[in-house]
Length: 219
Image 1 (tube, rainbow, N blue to C red):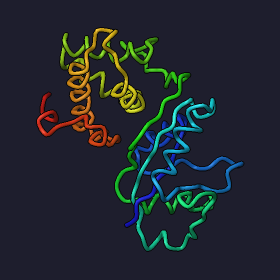
Image 2: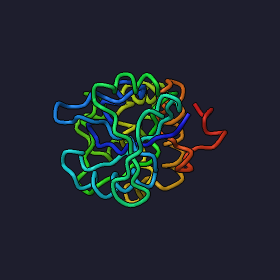
Image 3: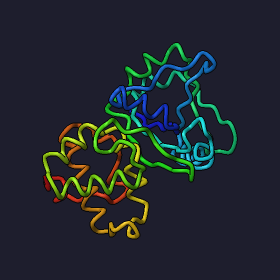
Image 4: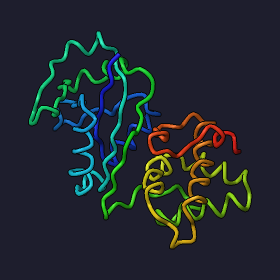
């Protein structure tokens, strides 16, 4: 098997989550090809420099990584479209269904880059409704302290919002909002353990040094 990468914006990432990270969404009529890339640094360039300033991408770039059957992928020629690291495959849109069938395991988010205008998706109409991104995390903290079962239910219900925002929460200093670094890490670890229990752990948290062996059993 071979590892591939694809930088995506908010809407495409949402559609991937709708498929529970088992495949990529169909191309639009104006998109004749699907372009996975072979180099993580290439995917990071697009996600960080282009997606974060693009309204159509929701001002965010997610780097997804996934493995594909090597024998299947050999039929696609590698195209270099710039510098030596700009290697990508051109998969015809009408072959994407078969391509998805040859993905091994889940599509994972390995990195995320957020522009200054990022607001994310609108939460479902629960306790997180009408709350901004920082408020969402603070509300989850309060809920965890008040009732752990309600906390688990909220994370399970709002899992898409959480996955899309969690790397931003990890990176962001929220001490001015009353959430110190250690408290924030403990909270995110608890959120992660719920996602693991629900088999929704589609972010490579270990790359962000978010989890430890002991943290997964905190709930």
